[in-house]
Image (cartoon, one colour):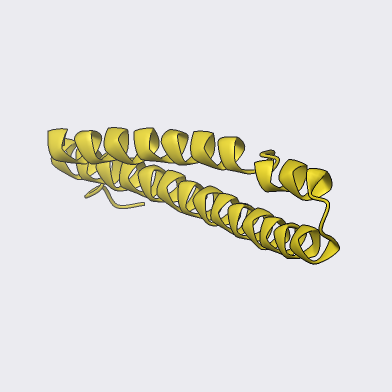
Amino acid sequence: MTDLRLDTTVLLAASRRLAAVADALAPCTDPVVTAASATPSPVLAEALRSFADDSTRHRRLLADDARTLGRQLGDSAAALDQVEAGLAGAVSGDAGATP
């Protein structure tokens, strides 16, 4: 039972860390946007804005992936808790009882 509990703890901790990463990534404003607005060259400004848009999109995708993985890890931890409870019931003899 200890091994399952350890796995659940590790999964939940990883899930929380991924949620924190996702929260940190999502609201970021790109410093390139500031540089683009201060650039006198329209061509360079457009290139910088395009780069910033791509960067923002990639950050959002990473944040979404981190949230999804965090949810999956949380689901895995819950499943391990259920397995642990089932095994505990089997060991105590509850699972072998006829309904």
